Amino acid sequence: MKLGLKDKVAIVTGSGRGIGAVTARALAEEGAKVVITDIDPETTEATRAAFVADGYAAIGAVCDVTDETQVNALVARTIEEFGAVHILVNNAGFPRDNYITKMPEQDWDAVVGVILKGAYNCSRAVVPHFMEQNWGRVINISSRAYLGNPGQTNYAAAKAGIIGFTRALGMEQGRFNVTVNAIAPGFIATDMIEALPNYDRIKSRALAMNTVPRLGNERDIANGVVFLASDAAEYISGETLHITGGRYG
Image (tube, rainbow, N blue to C red; front, side):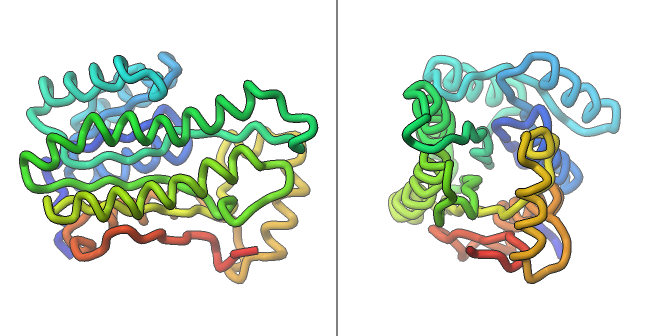
């Protein structure tokens, strides 16, 4: 299948490691030029260097997606070095779990800020370019957690917000040949998740509730992103693709 991604330019936020890094690599394998961006300088540079060593066109940029000035600079640099921007993957995000009676305000603000404000800042910066070229893809990484998990009011609220954001932005941008979709991963065995103190309990519960008898991995999500970015998905917008191994509860 011809996916139509050769020489497209993709920004993937939170792509220094984990799902973001694997997603950026999957796009690069399809011929896209990729922008590795993360808040951590070391992982950003290490991932960029690995991509370049493997023959992929990639640049690295440290960026706090909650900072409008940094995001605008990121997009300006992307266009300066690669000539355009065609695909945005709003992947940056993280959990800081606690029951609401024990959740500090800063943990609410941090999680909601990176996930929701980050998606707003990055989308707002790229969409005018998409409109001008009459083509673009926004792919937002939500989570099955939008359905609700105890101890994750901040994360669940932010990921549910991403789905509403996706639907509304898709309605705004469809007439410009810009599609906007979300992916809701289930349990994905990333380094960040494996480092959680209750990882074994979460893993056992996920395996028990999956209909597909294995854990998800980063490539499962990356494959979904590549599809939604491709010409094969040009008539899909405002949708949420659940990649959960069949788990919804």
